Structure formats: structure tokens, C-alpha cells
Figure (cartoon, rainbow, N blue to C red):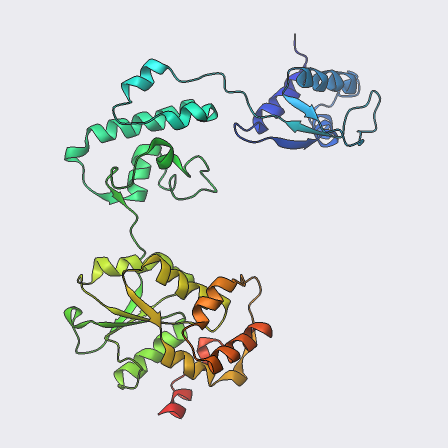
Amino acid sequence: MINIIEARVRGFIEDIQHPKQKKKININDLELQLRKLLDDYFDMDGYSLFYQSIEALQTEGVLTPILNKQHNGRTPSLSLYYWVNIKVQEDKWDRLEMMKLSDIFDFSYYEHHPEWQTKEEWMRIQNVYSFLKSIPEREIVSVEERSLELFGHEKFLLDSDSFPEGKGFLARIGISEDQLKMVNYGEPFVFWLKQGKEIHDIRRVLIVENLSFFHTSIKLLEANQLDYEPELIIYGEGTKIERSFSYFFRMFPSKPYLFYYAGDLDAAGYGILIRLIEKYPDCSIQPALKIYRKMLDCFEQRNDQKQGQSQNLKYRDAFLQWFTEEEQARLLQLWKENKRIPQEVLTSETWRRWM
């Protein structure tokens, strides 16, 4: 018969056991939790029972002591740290049931990774199978809508932090988003269409990183003073444009466009532009060099690089190659000094110096 100490210890260990990775525990922390939970811990000689529980779990292969000469300071002693080993998967899927679904699914991944043969994963696969059998009468919906229908939560396929099992699920079963008749819609963005222009008139598009310059650009556009004379200005809203750019092609006619991007002269701004170019190779996306050169003319207004920005040399070098050697030297000086030039140096007032 399992005593209350062992029952508590086993319950705690089962709660933290993971099907794919070991976890490390501190034995003293575990015992302290027991002492807080059980008022009569000392009266029942709790440590002796605790010691026996840990030894039993070690014998069963659930726990493995970390032999680094650190002990818990009690008698009899235990290692201070233990690995909680990977949970052994007892319930494997029925092969006959797998064969019934093999007309659609390739189960080879699960054969090589039996830890994924869980009841929850099987239910997800059954839901997808039933859906795929009803494809002819189904319509295209968003990823969130389909995810809620099939997996019980709209973020299952998108939020890997909250739903780690959702990451890679479609790859595990060999099914694409298209087959599930779902699409990851881009986020809407704020834009300004030049007065007197219509959607079919759009050819040149300026994307700006910051809100202040978005409003400044509108003033300059309506005064016919903005470089490139775009018919449309998009407020990129920092990195959001990387998620929202695809929305452009749902709103505007399918035809060739010239996209010009202008952001801060800093590590984050370089990254946004280069990632857009890489993600959309079929689009003509390039830096708004005339605008960036005006920003370089405001070199004296440089300020400190923002804390926490990733200093990616690949993005920096890809950005610099668009500029002359002299301009590259100034941009490299900014980089070495850990300085930046914010887009806000361009105002309707400072713009006059280039008129």
C-alpha cells in the first residue's frame, strides 16, 4: 500500500514528466513542498518515507540521480539533483486503426517517434481525417477558424508557446494548409491613397516604418513634394508590416508594383527591409534611397541604438550594398558607434532644406 508521502511524490513527478525531454529537480525543494502540505510530516517520520519514495522511483527508472557530489544534507543522504526521465508511453496506437486512415496519412513519422502516439494526437488526426473526407462541400476560411474547428482552439497552429504540440503538427501528418482549406490572412494595415487617384492607378507604393513620418509623408504627397511620387503610402508600424504585407494583394489588383521602403537607420530597420525582400522575391521591393539619403544628411541628430535590438550583420551588409562607398562609410560609423538615425528627423520643416 502506498503511503501518503509516496502518493504525493509520485503525483508531483507525474505532473512534470514530459514525453520528449528530461527535467531536472532539486530534492530539497521537493521535500520542502511536502512539509508545507503535510502538517504531520515530522510526526510520521516523513523524511524516511520520502527517502524510500525517491529510492523506489529511482529503481523504477523514473528518476536518475545526478552524481556531482552534491547531496541533500540529510541522513540517509540523497543526491541533491535528479533527472525526471522521459515519460514512457504505454498506450501505442492500434495498427489496424492506423491502416484505416493510411489512405490519407503517412504514419512513418509516428513509427519513428512513438512518443507522439498519444490519445490527444490521435483525436486530432481523426478530426482532420473526417474533415478531409468532407472537402467537396467546404470553403476556404482563416487558419484561426479552421484551428478552432479541428483542434478546439483558434491559436493551436499559431501559438507554439501556449500549444507546443501544435508546432509541426501539419508536418507530422504530411498535410498542408491548402488541403485544410485555410489561409493565414495578413493583418490589415493603415494606408493613404493620394487624392484624385483610384485603386487601379496605383503603381508606386511607399512603405514607412513610423507613424510620425507617415503623417509627414501624406502632407508632402499632397503638396507634390514627396520623393518617388507614390500613389499609395502604407504605415508599416515597425515589424508589423512583415505580417501585414500579404494583405496588400487581397486589397489591390494583381499587377506589378514598385515598392519603396523607408525605416529607421538602425539594426531593426535594416532587418525589416531585408526580410521583406527575402520573403517576397517576386515583388519589386527596394529601399527608398532618396529618403534614406536625406536622413543621412541629418547625421548630427543621431542618437543611441535602442536596447535589445539584434545586431544582425547579414541584414546590415545586405542593406549597405544599396549605397555608395561614401554612404556606406557613414552607415558603418553609425553601427560602430552603436548609434542610429530615427526616421523622425524628417519633418515637414526639415524637408525644406532639400527643396
